Each structure stands twice: as C-alpha cells, then as structure tokens.
Length: 250
Image (tube, rainbow, N blue to C red):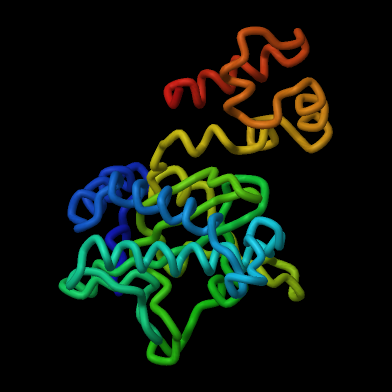
C-alpha cells in the first residue's frame, strides 16, 4: 500500500493526517463511545459457568489477554452498531474490517505498560521482502490503546506505515516501537474523561519513586490530583502541569 506520507516533509504530516481522518467512515466520537462501552463490558466479564464463574477483575489477566479481549469486544460492538459495514477481521484482514471499503479497514494495537507508547513485536520493525507472505499489511489506519490495569488511559486514531516501526537494536530484543514524529503528527489523540483515571506516573517528569510519594499523599490518579484544591508544596508544580494538560477534561 502506497503511503500518503511518501516523499512528504514532516511539516506536511499534520495536514495529511487530518485529511485521512476526515475521509474515514469512522469518526473519533464513534471510536471513543465504542471503546468506553467495550472497556466497561470487558471488566464486567465473568470467566466460567454461572455457578463457578470468576470475575475477570479477580484473575489479574496479563496485558496481552486484556488487549485481545478488548479488540474482540470492540469489533463485535462496532459490527452491531454498523451492520453490513464493519465486522471483526478474519485471517490476513485488519482487526476491524470495513466491508464496504476494505482499504479503510483498521488495525488495533494496545499496550498495558505504564506510559503512552505503543509497541509491536519485532517483526513489525523488520522489512518484509515478500509482501504476499506477510500476514497483514502493516501500513494503514490504526486505533491505538493504552491502558494500565483497569484504567483506559489513551486512545489515538491515525495512520502508521510499516516503515514507522523500529525494531529494538539488540539482537535479542522482541519489540518494535514508533518514533516521536509518528506520535506527534500521524496519530491523533481522542480525548475523554477516561484519561483522568490513569496513574500519576503518566505525568511528565514523574518516575516510579515520585509517583509513590504522590500516591502516599492521597493522589493515586491523574483526576484526583487535578481536582485537588490543595496539595503539598513539593507537588504543586506537578499538579499545575497536570491541570494544564488534563484540566479541560473536568
């Protein structure tokens, strides 16, 4: 698939991304609403029969399992909302298959690590010399999801090219990541109140140690810190930065 960004300077990427999103049959509001409802449904799931079922929340599932279940619930809800237009992908199709316009199909990629980065397996960062042999075309529309435990922390929509994925330099590294230009100019943040439920460690310049100090003071989430009318003096600068970044969500 030819990249709409091919031979275009980074300065032009914002405009290209805006046009790509405007031309897509899904809008940001639909993605947000479906994501929120899918996330709620995911964590109300019970594993097992009615008599011996265990709530998913009690099983502490690994992030890969959470991401997989979320994707399946999301695609099912979308198919129910827009029958004949969308369904879950099959085989080499993208995760969200657009029946009427296959070129508009969407891949989903999630990460349960603390942060707003997204990762693929190492194969995403390796050039595929035989496109027909690839399981999926890694270029195209993406919905990316960040979460931490039961908190949905970030949704983005946009376009990622296969060449955007950068494999870890270490020969034993198993992951591929994205450059800052991709996050800044090719993926658009979908804001919502869900972001306030993220841990304080997501804030700029707040590492694990500082996060523990803030949590010990009674502020475990971004929302709790942003809503606070008063915080210890040594956290005021952090709170002010958080209000500037997330205050519009209140």
